[in-house]
Image (cartoon, rainbow, N blue to C red; front, side):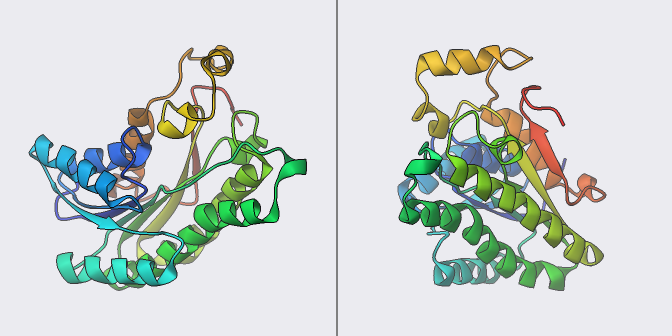
Length: 253
């Protein structure tokens, strides 16, 4: 996979052990110019430093609240002004809460959907304005096995519902944008060893979940980042509207 002369925007890429950071490193190491966006600017800058240490590609950090439409519009405009194009959008930013359905307050429901779904609508809409003019684009959205089977690992029903919504939105975008050389796909991870799972599961709970994974281990951020990189590549031009499971066989459909 070669990303020379491609410009990518990756949201939620500031987390030290996160999928976004590893995806940024994978794309940059293959020649891409990567815009690392995160609400935590220091984290985004740290990702850029790691990319610089690779000695390949290039990276630029921006602070971005993905739930703020004005910030999203400005970020995309800034990218186009600075780099002349936007080829790849990876909507990785997301949150979860382990709240049981009977206990979910309305504010928490709205927060989950605002971060996990509405932000993708904002970013996709703005990116498509650029990609349609170019006649080329790759959009990869972050789903979850929870959106397919209704939880069972971590996160409540609102998290599962938000990830199911991401899949439906992405498939519709894929149908509409296919004539313009733009693909839109979803990557649906199972249990991955990231900050988000580390903060929600005890070691005992992790061990129990690992026993239910046929390959016998948690997934890694590299497992997910490699999949995202492929879907973001030119070689994946005939794949669109797909929800790619990366879960070690824990959920097969």
